[in-house]
Image (cartoon, rainbow, N blue to C red):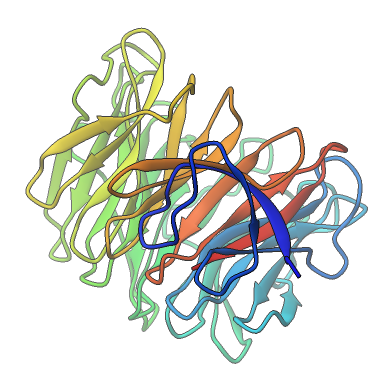
Length: 360
């Protein structure tokens, strides 16, 4: 008997072939398997539910869910399907507050951030045993009305964490936190020093290389790569616009140093890009999409993301494949593991998000 029915468009690299725009049943072990899931306690109202952020090499998935009050809680889903929920210390008590898990490494440690009862954000790291350490980058602001504080987004095998903080003047700065707790802050050369400008670090690989973007004084975004020794190189995707609100926005780097993300061109259209370790940039678009937004790249160079208009997830390898898990409000592929497993969430007809895992 078939487990699920999945709308698939194209052929997923590394998985069994599927005819273009053919609706096929996922049953045979050689074909991809779709699993839908919700964290225990997830609310069933609009903008509540389960949001998946990340997957590690073992297939463990982490993210957050919002309960019926709108409060966020972290969760980790083991490869076998068991889900454990958790909260960071003082993780807030109201709508939009709480705990947000963003990255899980090979050992099962999780990094993320939480918004406290005053709506100030703080970073956390949760080890595989469940112990949680809270930290703030030096210089992080504490004004609850301005969205100040510290957010962790990327973590590698060594538990080195990358992220950014917003200071008391509402300027962003990058940081890297070593496993021993030592925090180093940094700014990309040329980063602006005005409100909502500055440096935002998003992803770190096994070698400690960090990518992200910075906004200059003219509010244009540019990509950067920061080596483990602290040297920073900036870059722009081919075709990136140079007006305010345009530019290059990297979000993920793999072990080899390949980077993916999106850029906004001079016409205001968003495209995906892939930057090889030697600096070569290739742009791409999902078929029929008005915006293509990559979220993750794995060791083999597979890219996963989301495309608008068609509101579907996509995976890009030798070719780009779009897919729709369910619901009229779209499918977001947020992370692709080294095994080729893809995770993310979809939003149902009632505007409630639910997690999914697509495995080879």
